[in-house]
Length: 418
Image 1 (cartoon, helix red, strand yellow):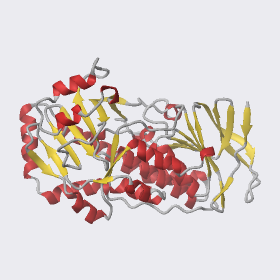
Image 2 (cartoon, one colour):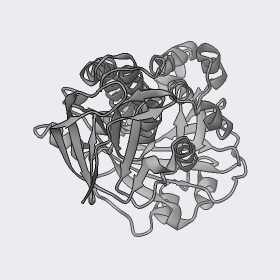
Image 3 (spheres, helix red, strand yellow):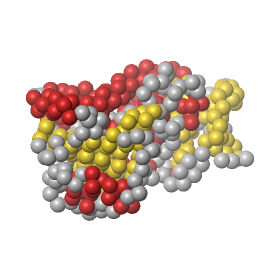
Image 4 (cartoon, one colour):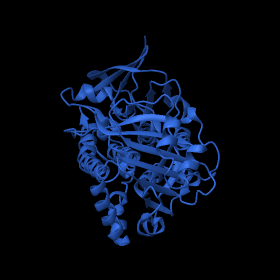
């Protein structure tokens, strides 16, 4: 077994502590970038053999883009994205329920809504980290709190309790562990063994990116609501699009030919839905059940471990806020570590700032799903559609602002004791 004490490192001229981020998804990479900006040495450990988010596409509201800007990658992300100004919500026969006013939101917030392939966003985040900070194909098998070591940094030579992280044949002693290991988080189970964990939301989602540009795709972002079904798309800069189909279904239902099933299911829905499906390869379709942490965690931290993203607050996708909330987590955690005098104080601040907001967004996402895609009774659908048509555009904008209007804290490289 190899080992290293990981007792701190110089980043950006500052000496900070060391952190291990468990999970190399969007939230984990963002946390690593932020902690490095705060002056910390960071190792990201990802169990998959390659660091590549192979998901389809993603929309980021202003809060997500602001978080990326605070991390120093916002300009690169925006340059690779398509701004979402046009589109809205429709019925399967094409009638308009509500129009999207992305320009109004941008005027209010000073930042646009954007659409980007997840793989592109992931690549930009990876490029902001040194290659040696990324460990792939290694699963964290043990995390032990309270390991006594002696710090050997320029500012601290005192004994202190740390966390020992074991992955493969390597053991690392760290001042902080960040659990960004997704909805099935092993770290969350270790920290909160009595928590019931994720549950099935009642919806399953199929998605893909088209192989080529689609004719007649004139909306940047659009949702169509039927009875217990939703079809949506996100247009990209190259003319291709990500589409998703969300269906009420029992957990675990799978189809021998998912694309053929969707083409049958949505054959009579308005254009460009059939065209999006026709522009898709069968092997490109991803199918996942939508799970969530319906029971809120009592804390996002325990000891010297912080949970982040889906590990802390996995939510349904009905508000498009899952990744945005993970990015907010990353910025707030890094800012707290840079500003507070101890890891304990930083984690207390992180929990205080992040848990109420992210859990409120998760509750709103659940409600949005029940009143949106999951609504199946014809009378209930008719009442909902009428209510949406009668809602003034200004009210719709204010509703969107409730989730997207967030100002990131400043990340500074502090000299706090780890």
